[in-house]
Image 1: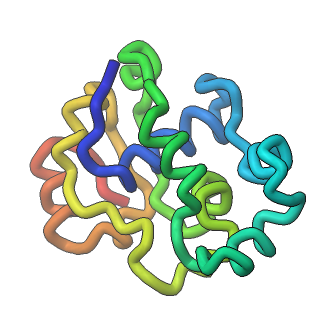
Image 2: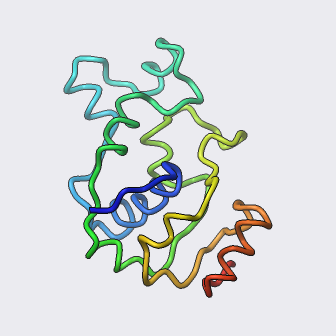
Length: 142
């Protein structure tokens, strides 16, 4: 099983596998998890009522940090999308508006876990240094 160092890069991979491809199951749903734990029916209200707005909810962080992704699934990732509208971000931080660096990828060391990655769309969100790193690895940075 893969061990990601950059939580935010792991989230981008999770979004691709869980919410786009549907190959990483079961799908995580923060509203369902909060309901099951008796914490309410509205993730927005939960975040505001618990001073967690614009943060990753602890329940989501715990889930995604512990989530194991098999090497076979990782080997199937050929393209990633960097975008503030990823579903995984809404599941992690229901109130987040994309106006800060909460989900910025800091490093690309985990790319070794994605042996067949060929393209990253929205790479402008990574900044010049990380885009140059992608290109140096032979990955298209669109």
